[in-house]
Amino acid sequence: MTTSTEPSSGGNPSHAQLSLATAAARNLATTTKTPPQMQGITSRWLLKVLPWVQVSGGTFRVNRRLSHTLGNGRIEFVSTGAEVRVIPAELAELPALSGFTDEEVLAELAASCVQRDFTPGETILEAGAPADTVVLIAHGKLSERGAGLYDAETEFRVLADGDFYGDAALTGADAETGRLEHGLTALTSGTVLTLSRAAFDRVRERSETLSAHLARAGDRDASARSHNAHGESAIELASGHAGEPDLPGTFADYDLSPREYELSVAQTVLRVHTRVADLYNEPMNQVEEQLRLTIEALRERQEHELVNNREFGLLHNADLRQRIHTRSGPPTPDDLDELLASVWKEPSVILAHPKAIAAFGRELSRRGLYPANADLDGHAVPAWRGVPVLPCDKIPVTDRGTTSILALRTGEKAQGVVGLHRTGIPDEYQPSLSVRFMGINEKAVISYLVSAYYSVAVLVPDALGILEDVEIGH
Image (cartoon, rainbow, N blue to C red; front, top):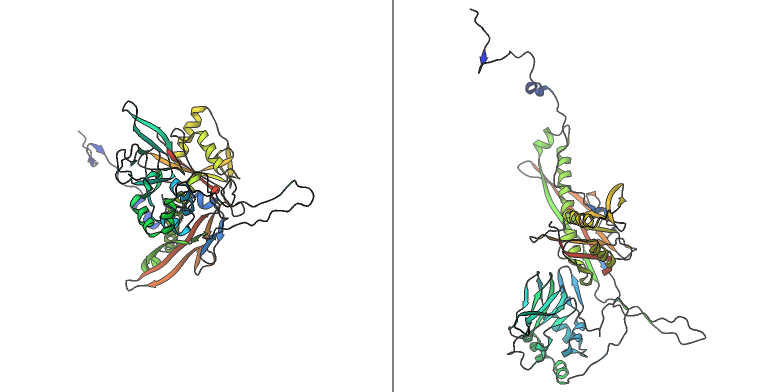
């Protein structure tokens, strides 16, 4: 009987190692490696498509012609970032203030208005509540509802941008004790300004002119100067005439309080230990790789701010008349056509969240449509009506599964949307981005201050349009 002398493990024969194992061999080899990868890096299309304007003084002023319309029965507003204000002179559209021209008193009344942002389904005024508030609708749609003939809730009308409700509360004798017959419920998201009877009375008690005006019922005045279709004071011209008629005199009036944009900043302090920088600097420069990833994060934050910042971000700086809603929820071809119509003078690009682009693709497939692509800097990107549709994950998606789609006209010559930056700053590493050495502390840690300066400006209102409340669910 023969007995095996080979060692065994679990009944399976094992063989002695005949060559150097790879785990040991790596100690004498240099591995092939990649630079540090970062999942948070995106295409950042907004930063690529925006033309950048040099802001040497740190502030960029947008001069415009004076623009507002009186006598059309609708209230007009101005917005600075997320802040919405009523134009004081526009309060003369309220029946109680029709013909009232005291600018100081109107400005005081406008300052007494309180902004309120709302979401779909929210109750703005409840039927049966005290009739002591005027609601000025800056943006959005509201349903006026109340008990119908057979006591069932009935929708009497829909109010939208520029409409107002409850103006009788300002002068009604029973305004303080009366009750609202109908209420207001939000159909979309939007913004209203409210003026309470108490705030109105405080201004009236201090103003003799307002008290005298309210005592003269039916006193009305017409607007003194004509305007064009955009609400700008008209430039009087003559054409098609013969002979030597008297030509009209005119001038282009300017906005006396133009919008100014100050450059914003995103900053961080990059820290690297001297031991790492000295001993582990080959084959890749540790400081350079740390700096590269930090700059990528700053640029991502920059694009996020250009979209979402409440002072200058695009989502908060679109004119209220440039905000439209979808017809049925999902982004249909009809909706994007209407969006492009809002920036119809040479639209440059459409920006949407990737999920919104997918939702739009489903609507195209539903209709059997196949849009063409557009070439943008050597990239084949989807397009609608020849306008590139670019992804931007900085556009937020709400908990309700809705988002927004932006259409832009870009460029200073086209009176569009422009990016703002400042080049030539000290220790500049990239345009408008500096890396400044801050020293080495007592723990041998090197510090660098990394700063990026930027902003964005909408030169004229129709350069930016937003399709709001876009549903992206299946």
